[in-house]
Amino acid sequence: MQPFRYLALCLAALATPIHAQIPAPVDFSRTVVPDDRPHPRWIRVYSENASWPGGVYQWWFNPLNVQVDLAVEDVLDAFKTAAARWSQMCNIDFQYMGITTVLPDARFDFRPDRINVWGFSFDYIMAGFAPTAVVGTGDIVDADILLSASKVWDLEQIKSIMTHEIGHGLGLGHSDVQSAIMSASPYHDFDYTSILRGDDAAGCAALYGASPQALANRTMNWAEVTFPQAFIAVTAASEFTSTIRATPAPTLVGRDYIYRYYAVSNSFLAVKDTAVLYIGPDGVFQDVGHLADFEATVVAAGF
Image: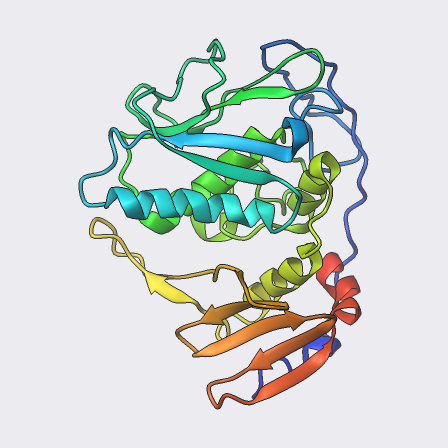
């Protein structure tokens, strides 16, 4: 069976309405988001306009406390992969600035130094933490992200938890749309959090504008979840964990198209202009329809 043969026949659930109250602006402090809002959606952590000036988020990596069985370069790549999941959806420019000895700040009452450090800390026992500061103008000026060095991680778990924490660093709080990876009621598992949902993309786009490739990436996210046997990039496990699981593929950019490669099935998904293409193990290109034709199904399915 060709995995895209029945894509157009997939039925969709109703999308969740998007309405919410907006917390008031604050200076260098956190906002407690109310839990009793009648209409769920993504939530801004701060004021309505709190975002990175110019859509640029510069960050440094501190390799201190990286788990001994993980290569520093692999952890850095995992951080970059998590960031790319957001830049595929909205116009945020993550700029990696290099290695630093500055520590990520694990205090709840942290004071911003405007050096955005991503790394690990023994000072924080929860899985991840993203203290973020804004000024009265609505500009985010500091967003460290740290993972607990007391926990045992594999690279795919790092990508997943960083995907969630980077959402906070962008200005998003915990969504009360349970399907969102930014939801915390309850938190989703690592496999689920590896793929952004529609509510996450909508929140990011509200702050920074939608990426020109957003619909293509949302469609490929949907395909990976809907047809998991056809679209498996790689299976992974840690030395310290026995769980073997599929991992989503990164989006790659060609001359005039974007694509994802799935090594397990030796297949590709690609979007060229307005066409969605599937290339199977036989190497045959199949035009499976116009990208716009998938939008209603993708959105209604929560992507």
